[in-house]
Picture 1 (cartoon, helix red, strand yellow):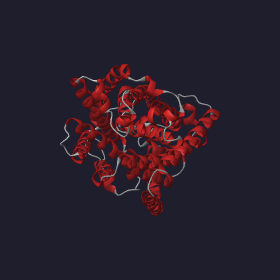
Picture 2: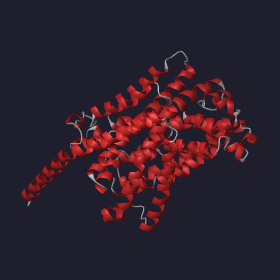
Picture 3: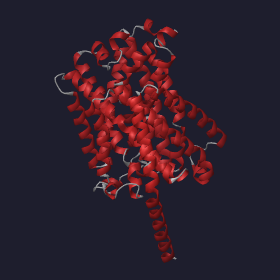
Picture 4: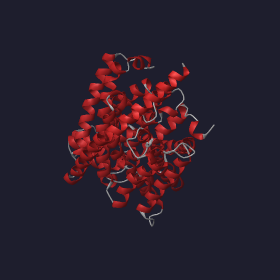
Length: 449
């Protein structure tokens, strides 16, 4: 059996989910959120977790009803339409500028130990390493991921265990000035920034066709991993904002707090096993699934044929290189992490809203699939959860994009216009491919009969 055909079990899924979630949010954006919310950071983590649980609803329902490789794109095209599916993919590609935040975050922790190294070079090195690992195959990527996740959870557990006794609890008073020193807008922006990282579990659905018992393992791993990480995040938020004065930790990594609470050997272990591995698992995890939807689209003639080709391990190498470039451009051009994160999260919210609508029409378009979901959810319950998810996503979308410069917003608008035009022009080729496949399938059926 080739490696590409080896299925991911529940614990493989959990490893990918946890590794995907724990990354830039806790190791890079914590300092940014402390700068925005002050001692309100633990509450921002709780708010982000609640936001994610609600907004996971569409992905959980769809994954448990119609699991498929290329999850998001496949859901959209089946339930809304071919062109809408490709537009979804195009927006999704743009959102993956976030890969740069993971690589830059990894580099920032390397520089804590070796300050003389070049941050851009280190960020590019981890990005290249992750590409090579994923070119070998999905199961290899899963093995590497699971080993790093074990070390990562140990490092974070030690950060909590050594840090909580050092917390100045008087810092964490529940007053408006203390938890929202920069106003409600900054507090909500902090929740929005953290919600994307906390919500990374949903991306395991992109590997739906490569998972054992996907109707059970996909939704279960998404929900359980999110809850586990939410507990870690909140406790780490307490330590990160409660040990040192805010001015000493705002807009910085967790290394300054770690240096205070740990003896030297454990400090080094935390920087490597916590900081570096958190970002490395996110880079590796992202590249393990990010090509799935685009590969499906390439086989359907939305993209040139080269993007549909796979290597011996079943990996679409050209697409993997394309996402490598998407992540590399912000690194090489020197974009700051806050701007990259705001743009990526804002665009991702558009994708999420499209997924919400796909989930809404699921009971009508695929009633048998919806009824077969192990969740056993009623339509009225689903609608209520989708309404809450929509409100939360719209709020996050507005808050994220409102923080971007007009020039960046204009470039995003041009990208969307080009994407819509391309979808319209390419649609004819896709329909022709669908018709040809349909005729071939009919011939096969008649021949068997």
